[in-house]
Image (cartoon, rainbow, N blue to C red; front, side):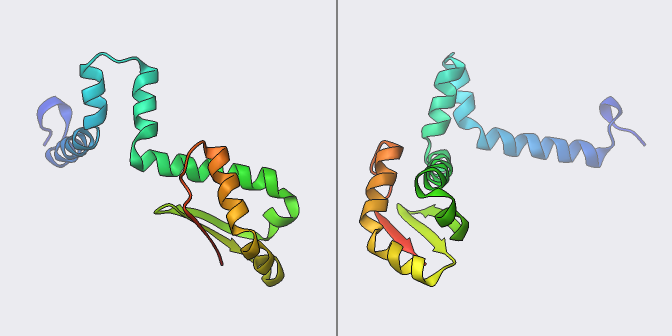
Length: 126
């Protein structure tokens, strides 16, 4: 039997549950919309939130890594992650990994310069 608006009870509950979760997680958006901000201001606010900033920085780091290090080093790079201000770089080649260990400070400086801030505190080569 169909419920209100042609929906069955279970489907309606799922939709209401999803809306409730969305509303809780989108409090930032609600606040921004209540204050009648421009879309640019809303997106800048989202990009600067901790959750989004880390992901955006990690994406930027991957782009910079591939651009600055070239195809050979990028080929041997199996992973790049930014966690708690530490940059984890996984290298497949033992000799390249050893060489990159000596260049950790330069890598940190390069990434911070490209990100425009002091986001990388330490570089771990593994």
